Image (cartoon, rainbow, N blue to C red; front, top):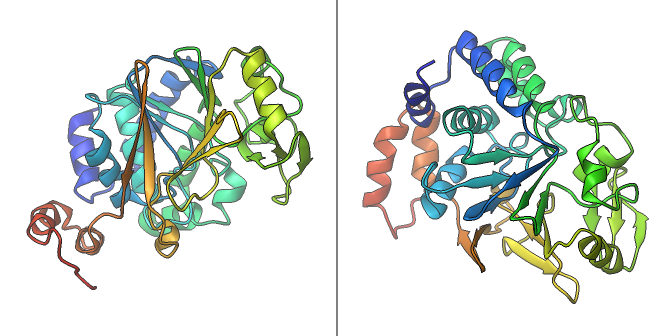
Length: 315
């Protein structure tokens, strides 16, 4: 595998050949299977929320936060669905994981699921771009190997959704069987689907999966596990970043600007460096870049976009 060549191809708007994608997926599965359910990560590291197939905005994220391997990253899941370029997003993240396995950590989100991707776009996108469902099968097989969480310097827990009434300690997270489709209930499901709410303890989630959990639950979980912070994604935040509860023991990070190309939100990434936590906001990638990428002219668009800096381009 020529990973550097493949990275360049995908950044320039080309897809890997089907057999290349299969080889990549098998290679990354061998890396992921060695990772813990609670993968230890050391700072400095930058934490990212949902991407949802917004490839050009992912490129803007790397421009904002720094490129791998100069910057280490944790991506907290929901790479696919809803956006136009889920395949490219997941492919480039797999390539970076293959090329720099120690510099990028990929967590599973609730959309890393066979069931959801057949409804929210990734399955149809793979069919359209490859002419069959094989690419979707290769990628969804990788989903089952993605880790559930990461812990930064032993004090910051990163997870896609939130907490579970069945999980009081991090050690309980370590023994969850993750190499399967996300179940409809139980601790694995809750970690993917739960949301914080301005309540004390637990409430039924309107999503139909996971739970709503409150301030006391969060502070007790942090105290029991010697954590300073729970860092999660899963919910759109118009400002890109939102701390919750009086002790600010939980933060939501959202990294898909103008979500679904209509929500008008900004995006954020959160950098942890020694004793400093820095929030970096970014907006959508240049509109003309998105247009040209769709026609396979991404490399040219980078130059054009620099010429249009500060100018509104309506397409």
